[in-house]
Length: 157
Image (cartoon, rainbow, N blue to C red; front, side):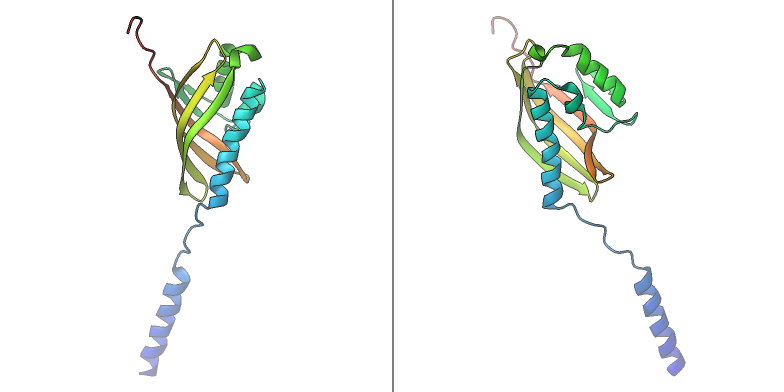
């Protein structure tokens, strides 16, 4: 009987040792850090600094940016698009984000939905966006950015 008890105890110890600990959770501090990325982007945009705005993105070929029915891949392509479209500070205008919803997808990833609006620019407009952010080297950065513009009303409507 003692032998069975030893095997049962050994089995219980092995099962306990093999259990995977729960992964770390997405915290309120993580949500605040994710929102801080967007605040820094907004502030950089409003200062006319595209390079600082782009600091919010993953720097690499894995970045995906979709807007205007086009898919752009990689940090360099996204930066080139912004530079081509907003060459001068006057064209950048004023950016605001509203209705932000931050959802943790794990300890190191998050989904953000919200609205964007650019005013005071030839490129003024507004719409919605969805972002996937990842934590890399203790820094949150946008890995996937999908933005849609509100359709313009047809003339005479």
